[in-house]
Image 1 (cartoon, rainbow, N blue to C red):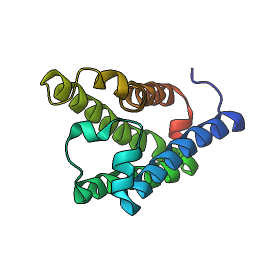
Image 2 (tube, rainbow, N blue to C red; image 1 turned 60 degrees about the vertical axis):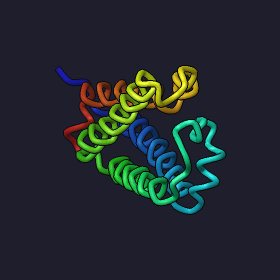
Image 3 (cartoon, one colour; image 1 turned 120 degrees about the horizontal axis):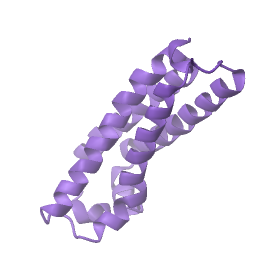
Length: 143
């Protein structure tokens, strides 16, 4: 039997979605507004991936901004939470797999795995966990 939905649990989901929305929007905005600054100042050794390409950085900035906006909508629309989270999580997991593949193929230095641990792999794993928790909660069907 599903747990009884409480205002507190909904507020917790709003907070979680709001934090991920804000971080994606800020990251996307940074990439869109000043891609070269992002390239050299994100603490993720981005230059190890190859030369800066402003157009490509802005393309990915669009992805982050759109994911952030979708997460912001889902923060206040419970019925939108699970499908939004599945899509965002799928992107983060695919992104992490690309990093693993590029490291295994030698396109990135081996120590890049540690550099990517918090932002790339940690984010993907955290989102997988949050997706599972949301799926198990009763707040998915409301809203």
